[in-house]
Image 1 (cartoon, rainbow, N blue to C red):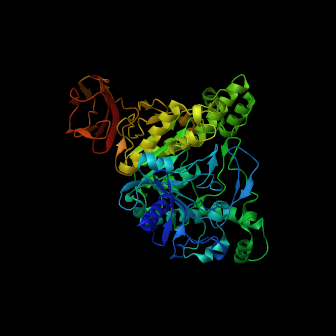
Image 2 (cartoon, rainbow, N blue to C red; image 1 turned 90 degrees about the vertical axis):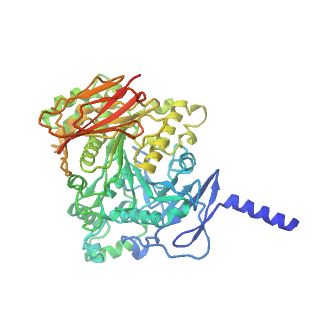
Image 3 (cartoon, rainbow, N blue to C red; image 1 turned 135 degrees about the horizontal axis):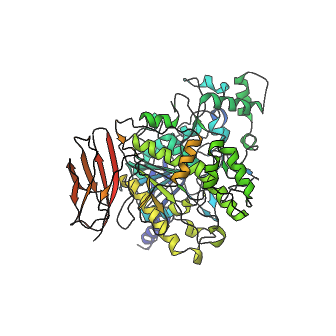
Length: 612
């Protein structure tokens, strides 16, 4: 009996330390417990892309029979790693890097939402185990535990190993093109999630992909590939917009890259030589992805007529993309960490002269005044680079997607500042929101202890709930949260994410975004659904607003028929009517209500504020 008790205790101890054994489609894996979360690190989802598999589509891993220990992160992919805004990089990584990680509060029988994160880094650096501020930034334990959700982080090939397009690779592919190996890695990882995540407690009908910076670019791109259809049901793009290169440009860049190593032989022979080189030599001459506040993207996805068939905005405009609920947003001082430490007024003027056409330079100077000292100049310098590269571009995508799908779009603007004095002066910099999404700022060297403020806690709790709610239902709203209204291009309403969000903001840096649209001669999207938003010239009004009871709205005289829908802060329909221009909210709770009025080919969305 004593031996039996000892055996049982030993088994329980091993189980509690090692966690659950999961049978995946390729073989059994053993993770461990981290608090109340099952943790599996370094799960292979592809064969190592080495030797002849370099620059080929990823393949499923070779199956295994013995239990595979998955308790530590896999190596990062080969890269030259730079700090944000830094110029001195370090070559690190191993080509055998196609692994993913899973955290789950409950395995096997649960049906939890699944959040799949794609890391950033300019498509040339970064990893799923990235350390920033003294903490593993994308560590999913807190998010899974507190959000009651399954969290997955993935890796994909980077730089030339993930994106090289070259004539010597074309004969290997049926379509006669090349490139997009990193994108195919992401797609294979998502296929792994579809085929296996239910064993980890995940619901395959509630898969959300999200990513920041180049990770956000990749999320946006995945919206436009038919190969992604059905692999995810929601998407979040953080501080990015989709970007895909035309094939000829990518091929020319790839040719120049290979020619920097070898200039003799046929294209196929050159590729054979490139496959013989160690991976370190292929990335050692990389330049930083962000320099002086300007974002570069040397390595991009390409239109190859296999993964991608068109440029992103063309896909959105046509309606030919994966229609899923979308959150997209950016930060208020994106480029503050990477902009020069000292900016003189003349540098702002030079920036305007270099980026803005002459007829618009006076307008740009008024919006971004050079100032009379380095402090004022640096603020304008950061704001200009932030708006040109993030604020305006985010508005374009939010508007185009919202006009060409019936699924909702939500826009955010992250403005919270760290409580740490040394960092708060940088504002809401590029990537800062990730600490809060993953609930890991409290674990960071600078953010922990007494420096982790109640405001920090408020922001991380809200962001976690919004992200998990969205993964679960396609709507970020929920009890105890500031109401986040759906996006409409005519109103440009958004949620400002800070310690005391209230969800009432509309018109985000409108004059600045208009300037950048005009600078590039941007042609706004129209609707492919046969529904056009009301012209900005049309004076639509709801009155009285706020109201304590009845309210009404004006309708264009030419409308013979229209439909009205009003939803409460939780997204529940409380009124639906035809040809109605008045409603009584007397019996409704205090708060913000959302109204949509739609005729045969026009629609308007707005807010009604109900007071007691």
